[in-house]
Length: 124
Length: 112
Image 1 (tube, each protein chain N blue to C red):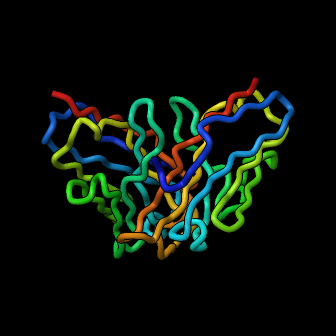
Image 2: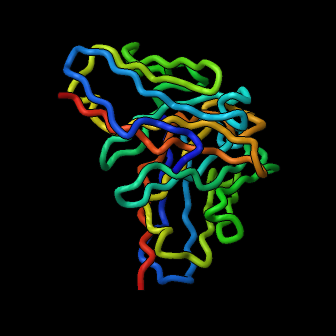
């Protein structure tokens, strides 16, 4: 069955760095694009970043562009989110999610499978 | 405030039908980009209810339906059940600036 498992969250100081991982299984990983989505405490869902199935397109929310980097390693069925220069307002549960459709050429697809989320807390 | 506007809250009694609207603009919904709907319950991952405006993933009851017209989309939930109580989000793509994905601010559904 399809599974996405996030890890790497934790407590980090403002200005610090963290790398989140999302390990996928149960489907042909290289055929799908992935998103990172976060939810801050008491807030709504916020889209963070997208990576196309072939990694040729990467998109970022304005709030994280220049600080966060999305990447993938098809040999490990993994998607990563590198968080640099973190701020207190980056505190959130971070989810990775898979596109519904394989080989999508845009970030406009729905996401049918999600991980359970990993909590990032930015505090001194 | 998101570029996709949703009502903050809706409510209905068990068995009733409710609708949640999602209003966008010429750079997202009205530009032809699809709308997707998610249910978010506390402590759980978001669940895809509707994708590509009106398609239901397998396993989603047909009580949930979606539609899109012009710059707006709607999620309808009929035969309300207590377990439907939670937050609902629309999502689309916006082609302004360099392009980005956008969620609405969410709608809290209360089953009375």
